[in-house]
Amino acid sequence: MVAIDWSAKLRHLLQTLVFCALVATIEQAFSSRQAFLPSLLYSTLIGTTIWAVVDLGRHLMPSAAETGWPQGWPGLLLVLGGIATGFIVGKTLGDLICTTFGLFPGRVVNRAADLRSGMLITLLAGIAGSYWFHTRNKSEYLLRKMREALKHAEDARLKVLETQLEPHMLFNTLANLRALIAVDPVRAQQMLDHMIAYLRSTLDASRATTHPLRAEFERLGDYLELMKIRMGPRLAYTLDLPEELAGMPVPALLLQPLVENSIQHGLETKVEGGRITVRARRDGDRVVIEVLDTGVGEAAGASHGNGFGLTQIRERLLALHGERAVLDFQRDGAGAHARITLPIA
Image 1 (cartoon, one colour):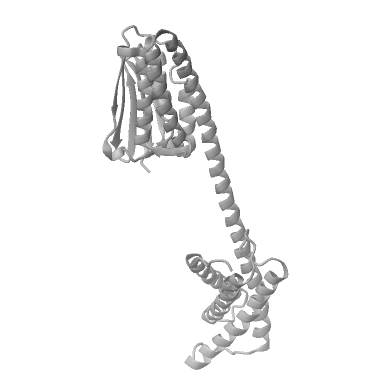
Image 2 (spheres, helix red, strand yellow; image 1 turned 90 degrees about the vertical axis):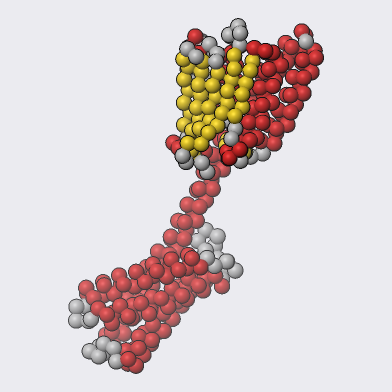
C-alpha cells in the first residue's frame, strides 16, 4: 500500500473542482437552454465522487512506481468503476439536493435526454481527467528521477575535480620532501608528520562534497606548515576565520589551490619571501573568502587567473552554486589577490 500524501490530495481536489467548473461551462456553451448553476452542481458532485474513488482507491491496489497507478486491467477497471460510481452517486445527490431544498425549480430531472447526455459527458470527462492525472504523475516521477540523476552527475563531477586537484598538490609536496631529505633530515621528518596530518584530514573531507569552513582552514594550516618547514622564515601566514562562519559548508579542498598558487608563483620566486593572508568575512547574505600574498605580483610569469587550480575552483563553484558563486583573481605590484564570494546556505 502506497503512503498517501494528503497535501498532494488536496491539490488534486482543487484541480478537480476547476476541471468540473470547466466541464459545466462547456456544457452550458453547447446547451444554452440549461441554466449554468444546475450544471455546476451536478458536475461538481459527479467529478469529486470520481476523484475520490479513483485517486484514493488506487492506494488500495498494487501500483506502478512510475505513476502511482495500478497497471493493466486493474487500473482500467478502477477508472471505469469510478466513472460509473461518480455518475450514479453524483446524480442521485444532485437530484436529492434539488428536490429537498427546492433548488432550481425550473429544472426537470430524470429526463431521458438529460440522462443520455449526462452519461456521455461523465464518461468523456472522467476519462480525460483520469488520463491527465495519470500522465501528470508519470511526468512528476520522471522529473524527480531526472533531478536525482543530475545531482548524482554533479556529485561525480565534483569528485573528479577533487581527484584532479589532490595529485597535483601531492606531486609538488613529495618533490619538495625528496629534496629536503638530502639536506635536512630533521626538517624532512617534521614535514612528513605534517603531511600525514594533512592527508588524514583530506581523507575525512573526501567522504563529502562539502565540509565546514573550519575544517577547510585546519587543512590549510597543515598545508602551510608543510610549506613553512621548507621555506623557513621566508614564509609567514595569517589565518583569520570569524567564529560565526566556522560552521558554514564550503566545497572541500577549496582554498589550498589558491594558497599553493601564491607560494609557487608569488613567494618562492621572491628572495625575501613574503606573507600569505587567508581571511573570511560576511557581506550581507554572502561570505567573502580572500587569499592575499605579498609576492612578486605582476612580475610573475604565471597565468593571470587561468591556471589549473583556478580553473578547477571556478568549475566546482559553478557546479555547486551556479552563477551565485564567483572567483576573482588579480595581480598587481603588491602581490596577488584571490577573492571567492559564496551564498550563505
